[in-house]
Length: 210
Image (cartoon, rainbow, N blue to C red; front, side, top):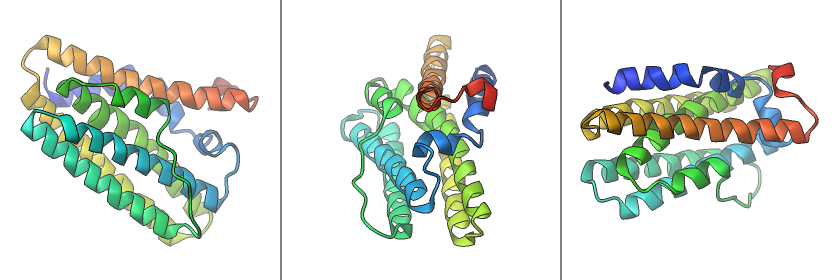
């Protein structure tokens, strides 16, 4: 296997979950059905903050030099993303430190697993959230907001390319690729389960609304 086929395999395996995470109902789940500009931006800020903290923690104890440099770069990018989202907010926000997906990510100690889950699985989820954020601001006729999240989506998608390239260097045998697939797919599943649980708590059936 190589990085390209790895990504294709992960996306094919989790196509249903990714498609549903790309549903217009994602913002209902993320905002608790409070789909209004301040709340949408707060949710985005929480996400950027959680990602920044995850990658900062990884960079602090990662022994592989190229992986450490990659984690530092993503942490810096997420820090910039957070600043840009906070600038768009009219007021302060008490930033939460991640949900189930980031709890799972922070439990990864192996370099291959960190790269696969954090730089491939996680951003495959994130770009679908960005699509919904872009759509929200387009519907609000807020081109500045839409362009903000278009930029964030483009930069987040580039992390996948970096992660795939890094896995090409890190994975030495089939067992490494299998482990990478397992964690990348699982982080998508964790994000999906959290999404589905949120909808269920609001009395919404996932299959019925996708």
